Image 1: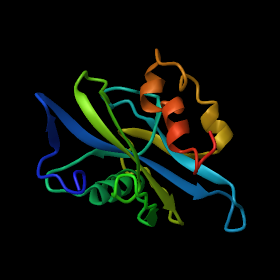
Image 2 (image 1 turned 180 degrees about the vertical axis):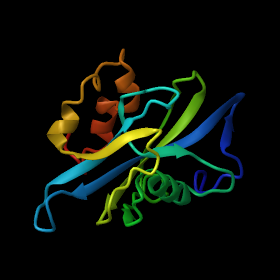
Image 3 (image 1 turned 180 degrees about the horizontal axis):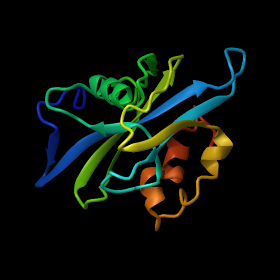
Image 4 (image 1 turned 135 degrees about the vertical axis):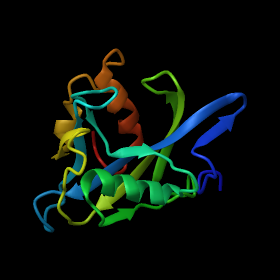
Length: 178
């Protein structure tokens, strides 16, 4: 399948080159095993980031050479949060575990970029902010907290680039009610 493994971390479509990356929705029960309430893990982008300083964002990153999407997700989640106990949710739509949607858009630097939006469930583990220079910290956000992220519905804000809630709402409709 097309996105299972890439021999390069850049994909050429027509005459345009696109970088490939993932945004990882990590959803976990909050409050213990008897609580059905779920939370979404978001981090606050740190002062050394090229863009989005102070914005909330998902864990994620760019595909490396000869890396599968699953390897990319596991690597980025571990590198950023220290979490290893994640479960990919299978979706027939893209035949790649966890992928809910793919968007083709311009990055903050004006380059064309494909984002694979991936859903994983986290069942335990301690969150460690492994990149404190890039992230001011990780926090579980309830559905209501996500719905109330300032700027996440306004396409004119930098926060919208990092948490485009209208897109997320359609992607997560069966998994997280925002």
